[in-house]
Amino acid sequence: MIYTKTGDKGTTSLVGGSRVKKCDPRVEAYGTVDELNAHIGLLGEYIRPLDSSADNPGNNHFNHLTNQLKSIQNNLFVIQTLLATEDKDTYTKLPQLKEEAVAEIEQWIDSTEKELPRLKSFVIPGGNVASAEAHVARTVCRRAERRCVLLMEHNPVEENIMKYLNRLSDYLFVTSRFILHMENKEEIFWSAE
Image (tube, rainbow, N blue to C red; front, side, top):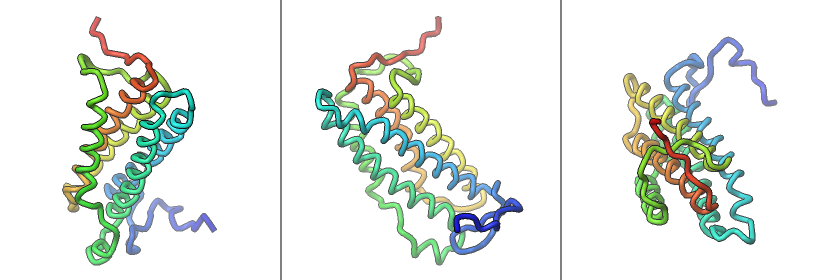
C-alpha cells in the first residue's frame, strides 16, 4: 500500500526510523535533491529524441550526455539517502558518494567546454526546451546546495556532497549551452539595454 497515513500530522521518518517535522532542514535538503533528481530525469527525456535522431550530427554526444545524466541520478539517490540519515551507525552502513564522483563531473565539464564558443555575456535560459530544462535543473541544484548549507548549521554534511552539488550546477550550465550548440540554436544573451 502506497499510503501509510503516518505523515498526516506533518511528520516523516528519516532513514533509521526517527520522526521529524516535514519542514525540518534535513527534509528540506533531501527533498530538494529529490526535486533536482526529477528535473534531471525530465532533462534526459528531452534529450532522448535528440540522441536518437539519425540526421543529428551531435547524436553520439547526446548519447554520452544521456549516460552522464543517468550516473548523476544514481549519485543523487545516494546523496538523498545520506541526507535523510541522522543515525551515525546507520549512515556508515549506507552506500557513500565516491570521492571520484566530483572529479568525474569536472572531467565532463572540461571536455564539453572545449566544444563551446567562448562565453562573452550572461546567458538567459531558453533556446529550446532541453536547454531551458537544464537551466531549471541548475537552479534547483543551487537551491539544494543552499538547503545543505542551512542543514550544516546544526548537522554535519559531508564536504564531498557539497562539492558534488556545486560542480553539478556548473555541469548543468555547460550542458544547457552544449545542447544549443549541438542543435545549431542561438544562445540568448543578456543585454542591459
